[in-house]
Each structure stands twice: as structure tokens, then as C-alpha cells.
Image (cartoon, rainbow, N blue to C red):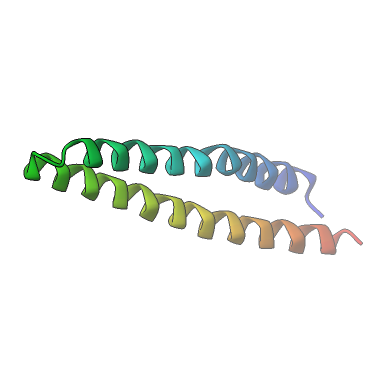
Length: 80
């Protein structure tokens, strides 16, 4: 078992635990701006695009976090 590898994986997971909710906050922020831009179609379209991008980012980060968690579990099993 590599203690350094385990520390590195935990740091990455901690960063993602912080980043993922921020993507959702950004999504809600852009969605709110889109709703407030109902009279301005180009702005509404842009904010909806940005909101969808934030959901894509969140999903991508969640996949990365799941992969890192699986790697961490494997490293911890090696130590038993």
C-alpha cells in the first residue's frame, strides 16, 4: 500500500467534494439569469447554454470522483 498514493487520492476527492456543489450553484445562477432575460432571447439563450455547461461539468466531475473513490478503495484493499 502506498500511503503517498492514498493521500494524493484523498486530496483530489476533497477538491471535487468542494467543486461539485459549486457547479450546481453556477447552474442555478445562470438559470436565474436566463429566467430574468425572458424579454431578451439572445441573452436567455446564452444563459441557458451556460447553465447546461455547468451541469455537464458537474456530471464530469462526479464521474472523475467515482473513479478516484474506486482507486482509493483498491489501494486500501491492497493494504489489508
